[in-house]
Length: 128
Length: 169
Image 1 (cartoon, rainbow over the protein chains, first blue to last red):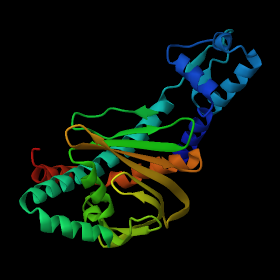
Image 2: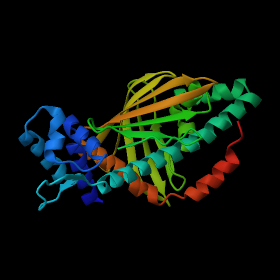
Image 3: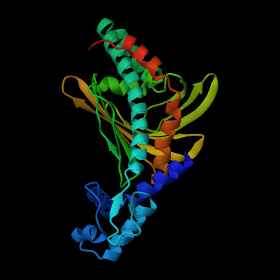
Image 4: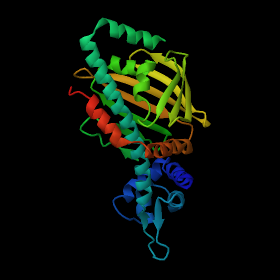
């Protein structure tokens, strides 16, 4: 859990930069070379390589070491991990709000039956 | 990074922003805004839905007014497992609650939560909660804590309970 948390922190830090986010978005379409990636930004290959290094260290992308063109590849597993965590968090919130749904339904039923007294009691409860 | 697969039953959506350490939760309810608000500020009502089924939320203080505070303890099988507390920064009746959220087990991990309610057509309401923490590591810890706490929840038990409680509206 701690290792996963550290890994995710690196991923989020890497993606905090808009240029790197854009690179990742473009890599979802397929592998690309450093010069492919540099083309739209009007920055040096060095600057792009620096961004790629951050993404590599976070485990977001990888590069083939031996191929001459060294295409950059998006490692989707790291996103699966994040998606899993976020989905679990979402499910917990959803479970909580389903319980709230039930409470709200009870309140609406109660108000239809007993208008005045129950509403007064409830607002007194809120004030205390 | 973004999960927005709202279900047919008006499911919760969540978004972890890649550039700022926030988590945004959005949920719609088949009830008017005023009622959703009341379910947040009334201590007896909050106790009925705040915690997982397997956990009792013992509400010690629930003073949802500007300058107020809240404090509650999660109790599972007779054992106190977490102590939550926060300051209520500002409350705008039926509209917005701004509060801090934290727990004694990790006292430096505080989030600033803004709950905003708005009307939807047909007497329905939308709730948005924007939680801001001070860095990405803190946000990741927050998301990860959901994993740990969620594991032991009896989802099946909950579904059965809801099936009995929820009238067709």
